[in-house]
Length: 521
Image 1: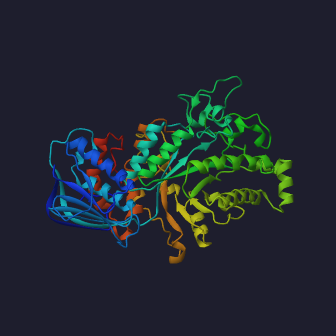
Image 2: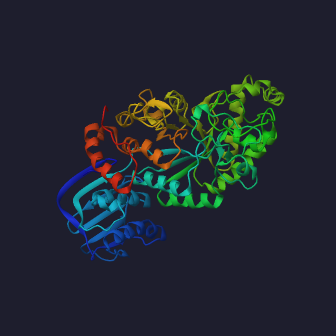
Image 3: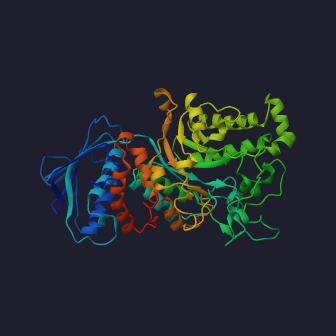
């Protein structure tokens, strides 16, 4: 029973169930949502086997049926019970989410050729079994940076498919940063006319890129239209994945200032960053009221596009030197009785958090938002180790763990001498699998604030979809099990054995995965 992530309980039984021309699906509800959920499964079976499975409302007990019942299982909206006998398949769930995840499990029980595009010249047979399953964490995420390098809509949808097949439910979309603004904002067209494009530095190392020169054309970049984003959001929603957009502030905003220089402390001139160079001191002017008018207008359009609860505002790596010299910022500090620039940053974040709260949304940011005092109701994404997450959980704030030690998939996963260029670090498959999101320092009550974890994919050194695939596979598989399965249900040797089959799935799909996954682990 090579299922990943490993179910809570899986009992293998004698016999098998065969999908044939007589198989039907019966469901206790024929809602449009249910039909929309089931159609991809039905279409996939038909495409690869020419077997057309009709979907019918539950009427009577019969054989060769896939029954879907909505009942109280005690497993939550993402849990499910799956019973496969020689005569029927029964799916029991409390919500559509559970049905969707059960179908992902069924795909893994079918011949692996089901993941391909070619006609399957073999019976569609499933081993009889009983599975009881539900996730350990409610935040099972993957991040993708599209500022450093822009990736088209086709790949974004493929990325979402990768999350869905691993039963992950959060896509953290890093849409803005110094190297490019990637989301259409109709009220501020220069964000995409200017902020989405930079001078090309093809073939030059990321840390060796020189800034844009006077008169140099900006030809590298791209952005997503609002219409494209709406379709992507719906695509993710159909797969029970929530997209968390990230709009960076108050730092990592050079691309904004290139388009609207009046929002910075110095007035410029600014250009979109072609690479990474430090110190990056250009940030929003905290003393300029127009900055907050701008951010509220931007967020209003973002909120219309992304219906999820959380909005990520970044808040990381803020160099505050310009604030110390800016007369407007100093006046703001005096007016608000702020003692230092750390408190000014906290005031800035709190103001944005209050605005999001007024819109029934919740602010989440990198753990630097703890500096100077954490905004009320804010959630923390802990990337600088676990210290920030522990601190936030102890004072009653929700936390998503994402420490660089285990969850940064831009790190090397093998010998740097033989691997494609990466930012540094060394995070093997086994190290990812060893991660436990709940720190031992927390009490049971505090631990309830740990929503889960996510992997971050920063793309400074990843210019192509193939390179991204290489960096996330199969580490995403390890993280998926960390977040779905209970700690006492995890076993490295057992995982490796199940992963061997999954690697064949990757081959059939055409994923460019890291091949020597078990060497030196």
